[in-house]
Image (tube, rainbow, N blue to C red; front, top):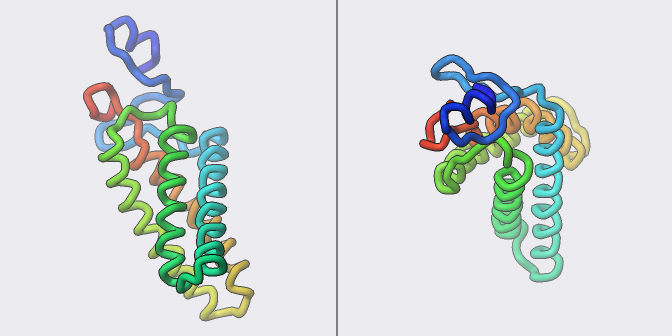
Length: 165
């Protein structure tokens, strides 16, 4: 449905640049380079918050690295969710914060498992510096897993009643 059709029927909708998909499928366009770029910028900023927080907690507050990682990853996740909802995907949804946060948590947990598994596999077959391997794996997981699920599941396009268009 385009904006003219929605307006003529008195339906208020978020402006979207795609057509409605068949039932059961998201209509999100994954090759939207502007959206992908915003997602990657938000992810980079969240990663910065994560790593700076972790280093500060370990070096300045003498926190144990696992505890610092738990707190910093949480801060990075909150940053990423907030940027995703208010900036990267802002033109694509009207979902409630609670429903999006729950979907984000599921995707985030899956991404963490995928990152750890792929990194473990890479380190088992070769010996690159773990920080570089982690960075490469994170980028690949972000492009192949996180971005598609954010676009089609977490911040999926919804109508005013909360359903997909």
